[in-house]
Image 1: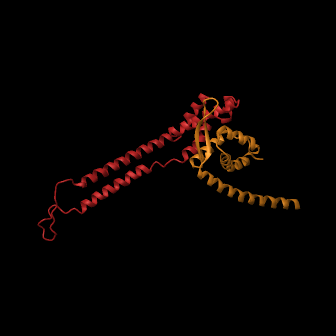
Image 2: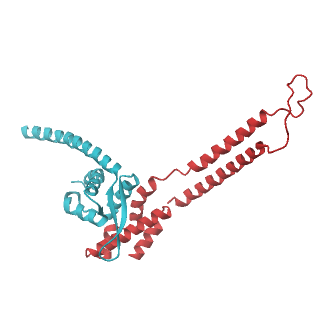
Image 3: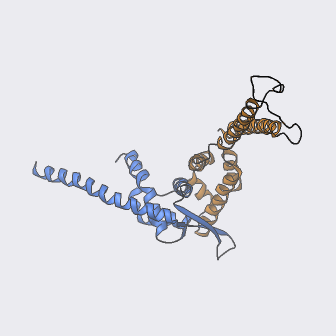
Length: 147
Length: 119
């Protein structure tokens, strides 16, 4: 039985928690059959080759997975929004030498204090980097789980 | 009869049969197999490799739920399955469809039989 379980475990391409669930259920299958007077060989014959059993249970268990692109996409959207706000702030900013020019309204800009614009840019760049890392992790996981 | 034909019928109906069985009261894997084998000889012997993937699919779809309870006898544990509210609603819809579907099939079958008897 343990060898059969090991083989199934080796064949399963599932997240760890689902793998554990399949193995738990298999232990119960063997245990229940034993209670009803069946031998391990009987059960293994009914289950068929470990690879076949693993393939059969993998289909419904990996079918309903999140696409995995949701979180990285959200980060990317946040990055785009932050950078857009930064660019908009830059565009509406009066030119530094505006005072003294006759054709423009005189404005005074108080320099000093905390200017939020660079912070927006930094947050945007961080979010973009986060999105890139999450995309990379997701792609690596998909490659690894592919049978 | 071609085993593939039986396979097709089985594939379509086993989900509903399992929902009916589980809807009848909390039950566990081996008991489900025994019940299937006792009552549905015409469908052939039920195997874990057929039943568990369907259980996983039904649970993934939120139609059944499970809890692991310690077995009275030997300290082992059994996973007990029951219908969720959504499962009960879906089974109701499935059964309504099944009634209409089987009546429709029966209509064709009896028309064929009547004709067959005449010729």
